[in-house]
Image (cartoon, rainbow, N blue to C red; front, top):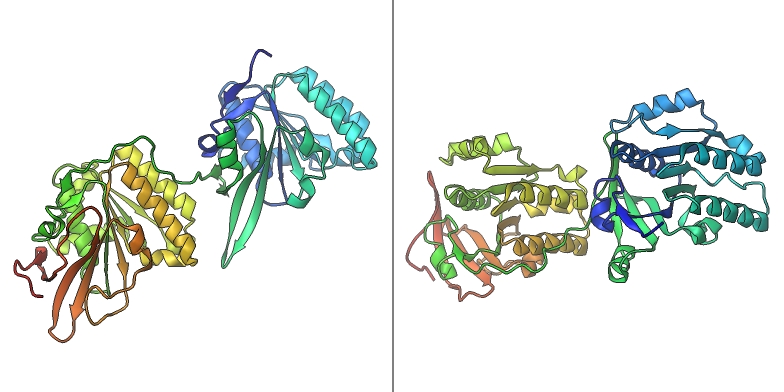
Length: 458
């Protein structure tokens, strides 16, 4: 062994967090039943095998090998090209020394680059603690003799990990858990220990939990959305697409601005966002709509009724959608989807329609603010102009509304319906870096969209 090297984990999103895994090394993957330890292991082995590694899976099980193979084959990602050598769980518990010899013979025969033993919990089951420690020290010496990556899967709770000798012998400890949240359950990954990584990065990794998802397509981990680094902000101005509005922002929004448009239902927030987006599309700027209540088809049809033709931009590959049911939304997954669309299509404008719907998925106000902060920070670092809409409670005068997320945004525009005069008004209550007009302007929703009057009403 000349030096340590970084190789792919084989799990989507995990390489982004860790920067790959160190080879050779030994990892403990721990958690209770049903958190996805085996699926994670099988996906790592399948992808390693596809990449040319010699992969070996040693399940400690009472299942018939053929039945086990049938279960595994139901997984879309499963690759039947890696080696599988089962060890009977009852025998492993009763006669661990014979099991140790059997594992050694298998390793000598296969000479794998990547190994998974699943689970290691039954090994040494009948020993007293001192004998169990000797057993695992012997197993560790056997593994260390080979230049490979080893994953030891343990049926362990977090409170049990530090009392397990395996945790002391492992270079990394990955803990998987299931957390109940209201009407759904979230799966979280935590890195309790991680050797061989830059100390600064290791501190960041081990201080966070990461959402992951499991389905027939595989095991996916969602990194936290972070702004790009060493990016110079573009302070050029862009048009909003609303006739008469740009003058209220000293000639338009900064390219990196996030604009919050707030008002009660019926004030034209969605139409405002569509005009903003269309302004960019007409200049061949790739744009994206993030919505929680409309399908792309529905939004295209409704836009057509008010004279906004969007379909041609979809056909040209300029307009993209991220549509999510808030009842089924996982914030980290949602953010990852947004990032992927942005980076794949070089998005320049984002219309985030109805952030109030996100309260269903993120009922905690502080958590919701944190999510929106990460989104706006990332968009700003990419010099993307973004527009967010939200509902507000009725108020007597525009500008008196209390909006929790207003402090996160660069600019805030209030839309207001006046019952007394049966008219609509708007005002800019905030715009960082701009001497914005604080006056209240009247606007109308016409067949060709939102338009402002040129005279000041107040």
